[in-house]
Length: 274
Length: 273
Image (spheres, chains in turn purple, blue):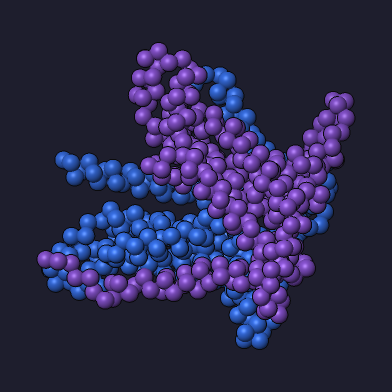
C-alpha cells in the first residue's frame, strides 16, 4: 500500500518555514536595506563608499584570522593524531577534556588570559623572580592572536580527530610495508586522508577569528581594532546602523568568498565534517 | 605511545587548561590581586552571592535557555518530520540551505541582522525600546533550530517508513502512528537537540548582546559588563562555579550514557540468544 502522505504531515513543517522566512531570511534583507539607505530611508551609496576608510582594519582582521587559523592547524594536527592512536577509552576521555573548556564562556577564558599576561600577572611575577625581568605581553598583536588560538583551537582539534579516528589503520600499515618512510607516509597518506577534517577545521576557526570583537578589545587594549570591533561600535556606541550594516555585508561576502576558496581547495566528493 | 608524543599531548592540554586552573586558584585569594596569592579565603564567593545583578542574570539565563530550547525543539522536530516526508528534492535542499545560514554566518552578523529587523519593526509600531526578553527569545530559538533539525533528521532517516505504515494498516490514525511508532525511535535525536540548544543558549554572548535591551540581562552579558572594569576575583569565583557545574553535568551525562549503553548491550545479547 502506498503511504498516505496526509495534508497534516506536510503542514507540520510550516511553522518552521514561517519562522525561517521571518527570522533568517528577512534579517539578511535588512542588512542589504540598511547598507544602501540613509537613516531617513533614502537610497544611497554613501555607506559603501565609506568602507574605503576601513580597508586597513579589514586587512588586519584577515591577516590575524589567517595567522591564528594556521597556528591552530599546526598545533592541533599532531595532537589530534596522537589522540587517535590512543586506546578507545582514553580517546573518549581526551575528547571530553578538549570539549570541556569550550563549555566555559569565551568571555571568561579571554578575561583570564588578560590577567595572566598583564604586567603584574603570574607570568611576569615568575619571570621577575628568576631575573628575566618583566616582558610586556598584554596589548600586543601577539596577545590578540594568542587569544584567538586559545579560544578556537578545540574547533580545529575535534574535526581533525573525527576524520583521523575513522581512518583505516591498515592503509597506513600498507604504506609502511611498501617502504614509505615516516615523512612519506604522513605526506602521501595521512594528510590527504584527513583533508575533509582540515577543511572544516580551517573554516570553523577562521570564521569566528576574523569576526571576533571581544578578544581584540581585551587582549589588544584597543590598539588592534578588528572589523568586528568596528561593527560592534556602530551598533552599540555611535548608533550608525547603516554603516554597521554595510560593514557586516562586507564581512559576510568575505567569509563566503573564503569558504568558496576552501571548497575548491578540497576534493568535492568528500563532504565537510562538522 | 612514545614519550615525545605524550609530552606534546600533555603540553597542549596544559595550554587549554592553564587559564582555567589559574582562575580557580586565584578565586580563593584573600586579596583582590590576580597575580599574587596571599591567603586562602572564600571572600569572593560571598561577594558574588551578595551581587543581586548576577543572581538576577543567572535566573534570566535559565528561564531563557529553558524556554528557547523547548520552543526550538518543538518547532524543529515538526520541521524535520515534515521535511523528511517531502518528495520534491529542490524544496528540501532549499529549506536545508536556509537552515544552514545561521550556522555558517559569523555570529556577529546574525546578531546584527536580527537587531536591524527588530529595530525596524519597532519603528513601524512606534516603540523605541523593543529589545528585551521577546527579541532575545526569538533570536535564541532561531540559532537553536538548525541544531535540533540536524540532530533529528538523521534519526528519521534511520527509522523504517514501513513501521508507521504497518501501524496505520493495523488501524492507527496517522497521528497515533506517529506518536506510538515514529516518535519513540527518534527520541534520542530530539533529546540531543534539546540538550545542545539548552547549552548553546546558556553560553551565547554575541547574538544576545545585539538582541537584548537593558531590561533583560543574561549571565554572559552581566559578565561582559563586569569585565569592562578592572580584573577582580569575584569574576573568578563565578567562573569556578560555572566550571564545576559543567564538570558535574558532563560526568552525570557520561554515567547516564554508559548505563544506557550497558542496557542496550545486555538487550542485544538477549536478542541474539
